[in-house]
Image 1 (tube, rainbow, N blue to C red):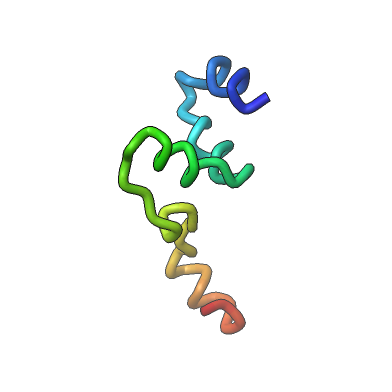
Image 2: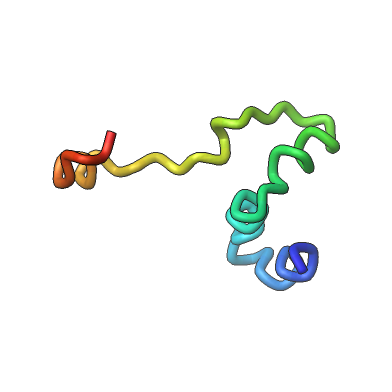
Length: 57
């Protein structure tokens, strides 16, 4: 399914988000001999949202 979505949505650059969502990004990057770290799968919270909600850190 991920491969098909990668072909279908390639122009929209959704492949990376799908790989991260399904936990495949790090393994595929390392299999392709690319340097990949676990922190690369996290999306940062915007500072405006952190300021708005004191429960976010």
